[in-house]
Length: 539
Image (cartoon, rainbow, N blue to C red; front, side):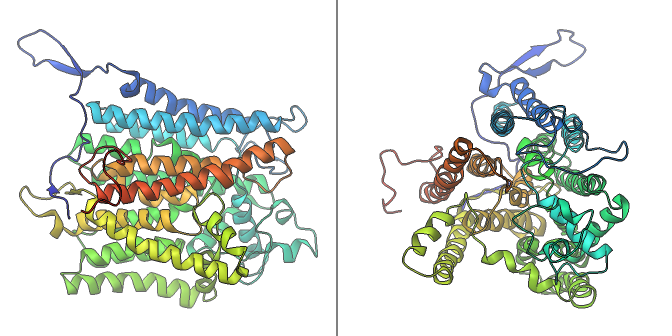
């Protein structure tokens, strides 16, 4: 079955909005103000919780190095990130871990309440919501990155370039094990012995951060944080702009992107470079109605930052499937930057950026499957079988989602036009379908990867994917707290292990089940419509 095209605003279905009418002057129309009757549709609670999540992040980071906050070495100036001087406090591992659990859970609750408020009729100013999210994101980089040491490896790869080495051919450990290096000495496991898996543009920016920061890891990390947050804000601005002309759609876009506490946590607070490729990809998507060649340049630059964004490229190509000339121009635009980057600039990069496909991440559905198979097969065979399950699942889940994700016309489509023939609408919807299918079935999947799904999701109609993706990112985020390869006390090790190896994989399987049930029973509003009808009931 396929869903009927929706050319309206894409607002979620829900109970009748609650409003108070103010103003009794007959010369002026009455002003309707959203007045929720229950706390879980109250936008004030939602916004308050979203702000509280960032405040807790800042408190945790300001306490200084701990099992969740990175150690950055000496500070020579006034540049952020800021934190208490070494020796003033020695944050207890349980205190900071619980604080970060609170960041994630409070943020998730705030986003859920905000989404319910939008569904109930809340209509905030998109500009104010965007300004709030931008402020929270910028505030987040005032403290050190949390729970992930990946940003230290970004600094390490940039340092290798500064000293004339190729990060795609040599690892940080090969240098610092043989000689002292003021930057590489601060890098952490588990990626010491791993060459860079990032695109040439990302590698160049890692070099730039080292150039600006000198031989001081603290300053290098600050510039890497800037390189993280600026593309995040720009990408989110592009998504909000895509919803132009529809204030309700723009409000949804702002809430689910720039003001989304789960993305602020996963991408900005943890210091990941995911937004760089997405920024270029959003620029490409925005060109879909104007210039196929320009759209290709955008997605090509995105692929030069991180190759996994190629999922959006496939979606854009699918959108032009009925227009061969535009499809050819898209491919030409894509090939130019990628050819220059991977064939001329960094010819060794392409092989390395494919390495992630061979990993299995903890917290995902794939880890328990791999561990079970590993009992009976050798490691290579177990990974191969898990990979076959993963790629088969990708195709199946993508097909299921293609049947149930609502057809919501992208803003700017003339009234009465078929959204199924609009390249922008098709590209947005297909990028959402493929991104979600890849994320929920991949062997190696992490919370910050979800940025590529939340952005197209934000500009399309509300659906069950809102809640399913919130479930997914919340538990994956919890699974990587404390997250760093540092020694923990036995009690904390045990508790975090339960979340990482037990609860999170169960929830990731539940997300898959939720998608299957949605496909089986698309007319049921429940997230898991098992009820009186069996999953096996004939369609």
